[in-house]
Length: 433
Image (cartoon, rainbow, N blue to C red; front, side, top):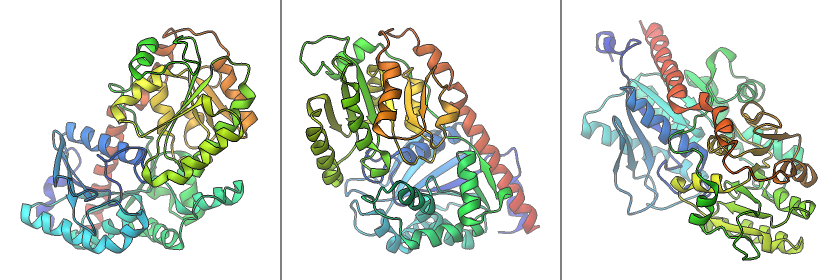
């Protein structure tokens, strides 16, 4: 692209952004094997960037034969499905062999629609590889966000002896290392994530910007606890119909690194809390053996009547579950940020979480939750007890809890991301002039 064709790309103007999410569909079912917080992030960010005047096209592969090619997400924001391999869910590593088809399909759509973009914003290493290929032909800057890092996940598994999870392949590690060097800018959601990029992949610190994840404060807000429980049918385990029983909540994928087994193992230590129930949200037909193992664990510990495995829940229903709960528990070995904690706090629900991701900077210790040093069942139980043993205050403290995370509202986060996109464009133009 010639210099005078780029004159409209200077800071202060709207950008045309190609956002890539090759393996995970931002409108897919949350809580499945490959669809989680990253999908929420991409969808929310695209919509907010659109409100600022930028034009955002999210490209993902077809995951279902019934997927429409184009989904309008909001003003200036849409999602586009591309054919790359079979029109079905496949393991994310299998997407790697279909990346050339993904790139070809994107280019065909772009040419047919007479589109051009000022910036590529890729998410996860698979999309980063596609973004590198497109950048070489489009001659525009490439920003990437890894969301999780393979080398870090492997290190956590080794350190915690969580051997029942799959190790990240060498292919991913090498791809991430190459992407760190080839992309023009990297967004990390925490200072810890930034340092991990430097430590594990020798990333240049000046190339990395830290911008936290956001939360939709219009969607995630406190609701009346009694009404939320009634709506969801969350009657006490003994069937008495009382609203005074305590509910602990887990939301996430059935991934060993989420530490769900530690949470279930914590329940016997909380036997003095009458009517305690654990509600587990997440998992699909691809996580059958993980769910079977967790159900068996609950049986072995004689707490199976206190644990409800609800499977997948629509994202728009989550505020009701957060509001119905007395505490939300995130016992993960590893989180790149910790979006569940942010959503729960926005709904006014206290959070007990391990000291991973951004939990330490989101949770106010002893006030809006408790950050525990590890996910040993005794530690998890001790943190939960701090809130489950308190008298039910209804919605009395929900507003105060919610107020502590207002700075993570998407408008604030998106302004920061928009600034990064414009700066990356300016820097790239400067190097090309």
